[in-house]
Image (tube, rainbow, N blue to C red; front, side):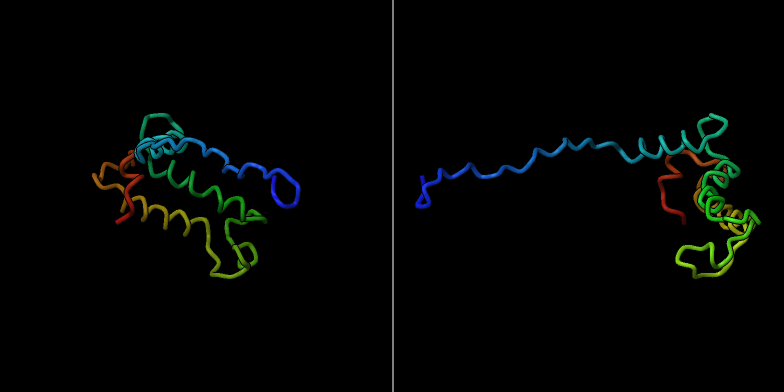
Length: 115
């Protein structure tokens, strides 16, 4: 009992943290490959890469004209961009990531930063 006449309560304990599961990054990118790999051949083609990464473009293109106008861009600022230009940018990024130049991305290539 303390001076106020109350029994002090036990100190609050921090909630137990969930155990951390260390998964190698390659496993995570393998999961990503599985999501992008539309034909399930274990690798990602340029078209699969472009289709997967164009999802956000398609969602933002409110009037479905194949062009993100300024008012469709995040924050209402930026340079308008066409779907064709967006896919070309993705093709260039794909080429930089395709380190073995086989025309496909595997898990390790997706994991590695573009050159």
